[in-house]
Image (cartoon, rainbow, N blue to C red; front, top):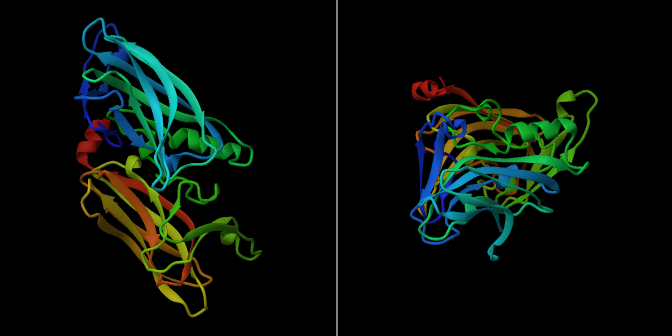
Length: 338
């Protein structure tokens, strides 16, 4: 997968592979961070939608410095926390002294009381002019508050949400739903309201098992495009077809029948975003309708945001579940997997 999901911050990032007979750790593909003019320049990834509040996470990363044999410098793992237009806060996660020709392990833990609007994980550290390499990065939950998720949910998060490797391979992450918190069992974790209000509600109707559980309600809408969104940039691959399924309904008078749409917003640099329509369905009050569609991207943009929108201003709508999963892959990707 190369650098899919990773972005260089004011420097250059590339991948390289090599094999050393006596060192198994050096088999495979690694990332090289170069052309650095300050210590904070490195490789980063947005992990906002994959974090939960009040959960302790462990971070492991394998790094080394490139240059003369005498080069020994610190490499750090940092989390940049951004909220509204306020200055970002920086949380130091781990630090290791790294040298040439030897992989060192960065190791640390962190926990957030509240998930910010954006949480950017990045690796930084050596002085200007020094390159450094990364062979793998792992972030996974090691504990959580009893109120957050069940034992079953712990395994789901640990297995599929926050494990990103730099190797070119189709990992287990590429199989199954790429949406975080697809059934709203964890409230609105991973989801963000776009210029409206989102909340969750639960109810039970004896004669309708399909309506047991927690659903999301989208309200206070003043335009059709306002709805619920999730950043999926780091969780899908180019040249692969994905299927989208979502269960939705409109709230209001019994006569209300309106379209609900699934859309993908594609953002690159400072250019105007492009919008890819994924699916559309006519939804009414009291009946869950199924949104269904597929999409395929040749190239992953800098940011890909999936969202649900559609009813006119003033109309609320509910979401019961969302799934996005791969259904096929290109020949070139299959050959990589093999």
